[in-house]
Amino acid sequence: NEYKSYLRMLLRQIAARFPSSVRLLSTITTSHLEDKLKQNLKVSAIHVEDISGGCGAMFQIDVKAADFKGLTIIKQHKLVKSILKEEIQEMHGLTINTAPS
Image (cartoon, rainbow, N blue to C red; front, side):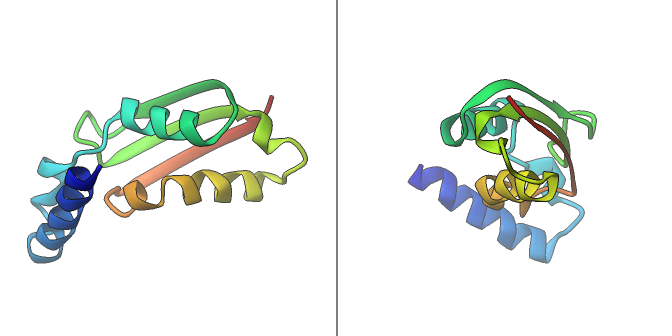
């Protein structure tokens, strides 16, 4: 975990100096995003797709979780974004679809 945090910090520094190069160095994967959401939510269904052609710049996340029950869609999306806060900093774009289970 410490190593991953260090790598993310290095990627942010590289992105600041060489914005066009950072996408080649992205460490975000669909399985990482799925795992992180599963660790923090009571997920009943999840699908994460890299819609950037595999470079980790843009993702689409479809997730159903018991945690969303009673929350507006905006609050559901805020919850997902708060869980993936660090990863979102490295992304170019993110599409989120949520539903309670």
